[in-house]
Length: 201
Image (tube, one colour):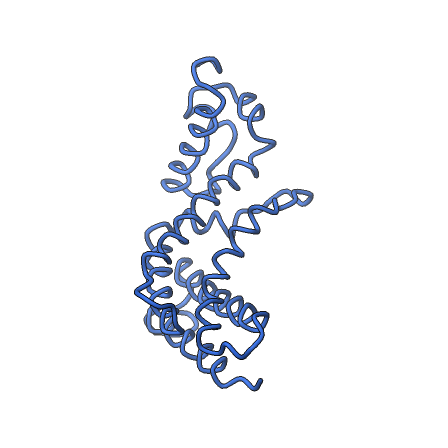
């Protein structure tokens, strides 16, 4: 096995996260373990815990990369001024991103943390950043409404599209409805957008 001195701390952290990411992409997060990861990077298992508190922390670091990737995909979907219709482009890139990163997306929402493991505030901030991008779209449609209402509409929309996407990924969507996932997602966007546009002040 390699020695810790073979890499700087920063290099080793990156190696651990990059290798964990590759293993999750190939096999899914349920197959990731400290033993398998340490073997893959060529270090003793204890080395992982010199840089991360536990496996949860390693998966959290992988998940940050996934969230950053989705944020970048959202940004690439913007065309000019942000409006409510931008949400439809976000839906397209969201579904495409989840399809292309199925195991990473499952790790983001389906990985079971230790019961006493706290979610870092900066991690929650990453998710809030995505919600804020949706919020901007709703606010552009009804600038007369409080921002808190746009934020709530954004959370509901994100949860709705994520739920049907998860059903699709698990192969269970067809048990509920025999419709194309893209069509469903865009219908959800339209429903939430129309509801917000018609909301009473």
